[in-house]
Image 1: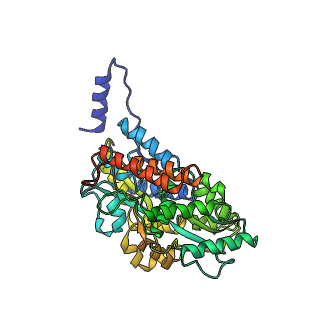
Image 2: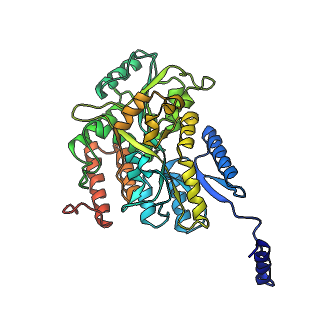
Image 3: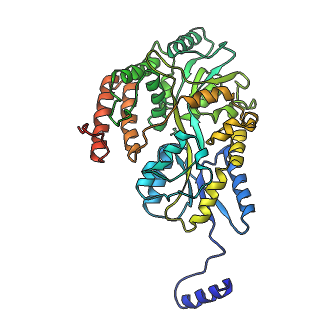
Length: 423
Ligand code: GLC
């Protein structure tokens, strides 16, 4: 049947009723980060997709950049079973939750070269043996350091502390180290890196909750002391997210900064940054008894389970996660590709402004946050108690004891507790 006869039939069916005809095909909607250069990049990639699919329009839905706020918005939309956005940018920690809730579609057989995705990113995109998202870019926590103040990156956390204290006491910089200490998801990633550095874990491989063990208490105590009177992290960091941390480092106020790869390109812009050409990166160092640990973050693309155009939505996901688009993202916004083959190809060294050897070292130390459908609740518990310990309202031991007890209860309530460990 021609589209004219379809229109005619619709007109007849509508006769007398209060309905109107759509103006052309409904656009595909994409929701994700669209600030600054990242926005320019996304828009140009979406435009390229439209060129390759004549007649298709893709609309960008801008969402808040802060992880927790975007999560809240998505939960509202998807819970209400709305058809838009068709394609969603998910934080790696949400895929299990959204898949278990039935909010995103299976992508099994929808993507070419699934085996090429980095294993840790792929694991976070799977739920119950199925694939529910496509890894888009990976984030790893990095230590940024000032090359004009220090000849080389610290090799251990105590060495970092000494160098940071020294820099503050000589007046070279007002702050030694800056990190994300606000009560939100970023704080959990900073803690995870300290935790691994001291040999601890949130959950053991068998699922037991181990976040109250001695190594974890040592890690949180180190963070709290770093904020204290003889410390080197400014107390204002307790309200800072990624961007406030970047501003402090970019203004030349800190010797070290813990942040994600995206900061590299912005710090290099000498029109805005006072440290352009005077910084480098290294993996966040470890302490005795622990190992170098980089929180694994990043974004994945998923298709709304109620999308009216699932096949086109899947095509958009495949397009945006293809090597060409990933390389372009590495070049313009210094975000790391999620495909293994790109790390073996010379094109990445040319495209990525960050030193590739340090990126590889951080990726080798990358550790995911627990992959569970109740991750958001688990994280919320940690955020509350970590923040109380850091702001001096609870001791690190009490904070972690209470957090662990609440997490055990959460897992038991959700039927996800490790066998024999229900509280
Ligand atoms: C970055 C990471 C993400 C993490 C968030 C925390 O966006 O990619 O995984 O949850 O920061 O603030």
